[in-house]
Length: 182
Ligand SMILES: CC(C)(COP(=O)(O)OP(=O)(O)OC[C@H]1O[C@@H](n2cnc3c(N)ncnc32)[C@H](O)[C@@H]1OP(=O)(O)O)[C@@H](O)C(=O)NCCC(=O)NCCS
Image 1 (cartoon, helix red, strand yellow):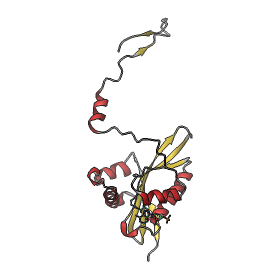
Image 2: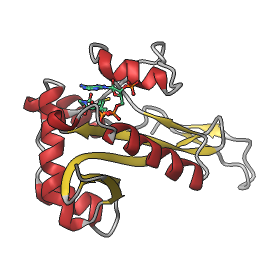
Image 3: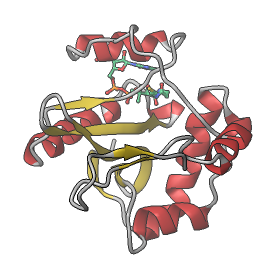
């Protein structure tokens, strides 16, 4: 059997990335939420302002899995965090080391870039993956609740007048600081 290798994804991998994202969405029973197009992935990952990076795991020349990640920042640690958005290995390749190899490479990247931690979300019914992550020493933080604003509520918030009451100070112009309505 050909051996596994991992490399950074380039814009030539966009169709592969889209295919693997779709595979993950189907596994997670969220295919109906998968809207991303190749054009979006190309622009957002490999355009002028890249929002993410990705690793492709190959057996021989065939892509068998991927990891897509970006960096957030922990103000408490004062260090960046490697945030893993997607991790996926093709069904026929599972249990042969690709997932562990991808996470190992991500851990190396995290340390090279001065991150204090890696973080990702896992669905509560995904017990094989949860077992795997626990085995690596990861902890599950159930007290943190993912908070999401999207669609109409997001647009509604963006349209709201930002300030009911603005505070303006006249300090420096001889005044003692005065409140006024916006
Ligand atoms: C989770 C996943 C990325 C692990 O990749 P993998 O290549 O199967 O993992 P490896 O072969 O490196 O094995 C690592 C561990 O994964 C476990 N594992 C997790 N899910 C598995 C699955 N569906 N089939 C086989 N092994 C699985 C293995 O038991 C193994 O644990 P061990 O080493 O402690 O015995 C992969 O199984 C997968 O893509 N699953 C479906 C999508 C998914 O759950 N993604 C993660 C979302 S948070």
